[in-house]
Image (tube, rainbow, N blue to C red; front, side):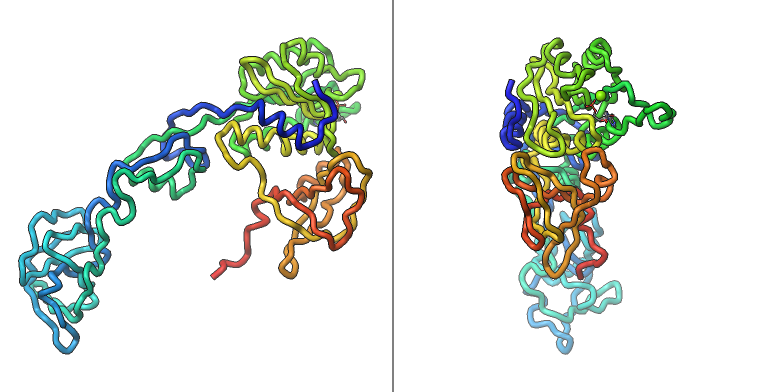
Length: 416
Ligand code: AMP
Ligand code: MG
């Protein structure tokens, strides 16, 4: 077991030990946000047949060559083709066919004249323009050809993918399974939110924030409850989570008298890969793997440390399990609104609020940066990376910020 790893080495050790979940087949209608575990090839052309882009008249161009408002050309309306109608009857020379948007174009027709460029009494149509070749005709296969690879494996399924899968006649699709994450809290002081906090109790907020972080990344949390500070109770709770893909505990991983998590992990056969990462907040993180069982993360107990270590280390692992190729948050370079200082040795993640100003993104501390001050996590839109050996980031300098909040990119303006 290694101790006191740098953040990058810890992340690498975690991702090396993290597999990708096997596929499962699910309904296309519930596949939004999932990661595709197959390459989707088309067994058909889209559109399946030449069809009209307009309400109008299918014609042979030769019959209406040179037509204009002054020199209209009149044709008999031989038949009508509605959307979904039958276009097997060829259009003979000297005929027009009434055609509606989306209707198949009959053999022989090589253009559609839109209704606005015609006059008609229902029996005959006067054509007022000379259409160009295949005007207002959407060609069969112009979007997708048979055999095309339309969506690559690993794509994150968005609304467009859902629509395309449906167009290709697919009702089910293979995606990576969602990891199940067993969550447990440890500590004699912990109670649930509806219980009294008299006598030095505190609410087990980690149970809630960590479950929400699981959901936000598309994993399924399973809450195992609160373990009391005895080796027996901690062990029993951990054992209840052995069937999950990932087991996440909070607290009890420091070096205090009641910190049993590391001992229990060894007892239940968890190979502990490291303990301690050179970051703040969140040093006492333990990571291991149970042979044939879950990945195990023992997170620190302080509410911000628990969320921060989840964010930096558990979240990328969950994204890898879920099949994602891009495991990390978007980052921006942001200008500091204030000078930050620290001691060398640990990488700090500074909770910041972000705003746009004069073409730059400006980062400002999101309040009390103590590892227990959860309010900052309600304000933080980003986490500013303060590198381990640096001691000062001056006001006006630029630094890398992981953007936590998609809403930062939302706008009050429509953009048009
Ligand atoms: P520990 O690692 O057990 O010493 O816990 C560190 C700090 O985190 C203590 O102040 C605990 O009360 C607090 N803490 C531990 N577990 C939780 C939890 N589930 N929710 C909120 N705070 C917690
Ligand atoms: Mg404790």
